[in-house]
Image (tube, rainbow, N blue to C red; front, side):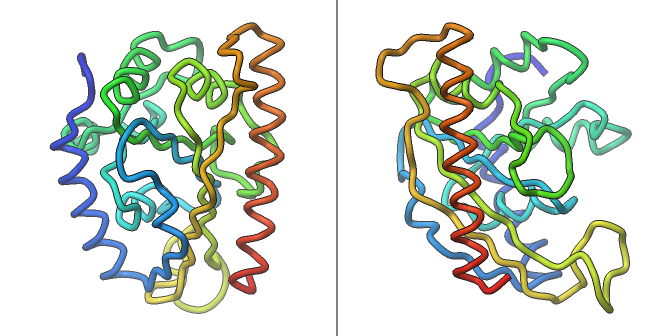
Length: 215
């Protein structure tokens, strides 16, 4: 897909997410008001369930453009994801096209969704990629940490890595923060330092979210 991802498409994706999530699970949304109502913002989401992306799309107060690995763009899902304004990423190298589209979202005052851990795992923000820091510093966009907490065990779980149907899933939005040091520097050292700051904030938010929800 060329050009900046469609905001109108992302708005459609949000409505689909709302219907899907509230139809199949019982989302409890906390702190959504912390997402800036306008201007560029990055939502950094932990990634332990296959539904983390749609769940946040359906519960965030703004349409989101998520960075999604190209492997997910198979069959009819590819045109669908493009149609709802998502950003395809080739993780095998520096995908300049994806970088340009993601920056375009932020430059247009949009909301970008990122799984900073790169792949679905423990969802504990233990391993962050540098891309999040680059986008935040380059675009001067605040980061809002988002914790998605739901069980992947127990009765009712019909698909691996999905919470049991009709189970409660907590989506906790944290306070927005700036990743950079205020200098605007984008050197490797500056981005490494920003990544450390981001990891500290995301890890702290996840711990707070678990205490808040009793997860």
